Length: 362
Ligand code: ATP
Ligand code: MG
Image (cartoon, rainbow, N blue to C red; front, side, top):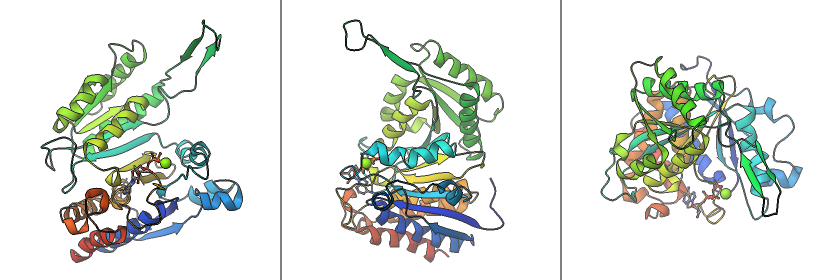
């Protein structure tokens, strides 16, 4: 996608808990980046997809939510969920998961990058050594609800659940991953498989990787079985550039990756509809964190980084990269680190420091 001529319109949904505290910092940084790179952005705020909205209206979303946000260029999302007040399956299925499905966000994209000042549980790793992306298939595969139980509750009980892979579903995620590796100049892709144990669907996945790779001769690729792949995430993370995986394997890898790079407070995530038919959604990996909500101490970096991914996706890679560099600058200074990183800065102090780097460079 290329930069748009008529300006960007972003739907902003702060949601619950610390979402309401970190989103304003994300917007502060996006505004600073927009100014520096002369990007015309309008932010439209929405109060739905939150406990407050549910309490007033009895639903997570208004009936015309699709009309309200479907025409935006992207959705900038905070967090949803407040388990003490509303069950997670109601809040999640009533909003975020509905967005994913209705807007056909079939890619989940997560950067895995070790930042300065963030202690990695992998001893001795330095920033620069871990820097890759996990591309997860977000709509089919192992998470089908096809299957059933027979003889339930008896000694003869049989339970099964199918993995569903479609040509369209597999090919489109592979095309996204190869294209992403190509256009971000990463030029190397790793496919997660398990064709030595899962004898029907995974060989099919491998076959499609082989086939789709032919359209991307510039991108070198390899494949690993998921068991050894998880070991390499921990032992040799420098090996990876872009890792593509089915729904279940991607789910595991996209949690393991950010865990290898430190706190949950800094990692972002994109739920992407690559065709651009529907808006993509950018959010931090963390949730609403009710245990620290309302105190102004949440780490805003995950939300801010999600904004960088959003600008990159919308055709402003320099602006996205500048935000990531500003994050790195600020995290390198202990005075601006939040508590989860062993510092004392509050949410706003950290957000203002990152925005300040962008303003100073203007
Ligand atoms: P989800 O809502 O995605 O299911 P969760 O409810 O399991 O996630 P989170 O809300 O992400 O978990 O919180 C997990 C832990 O991490 C909590 O103790 C929370 O305080 C902490 N945490 C999460 N996000 C942040 C942040 N931005 N800054 C500091 N601590 C955080
Ligand atoms: Mg939660």
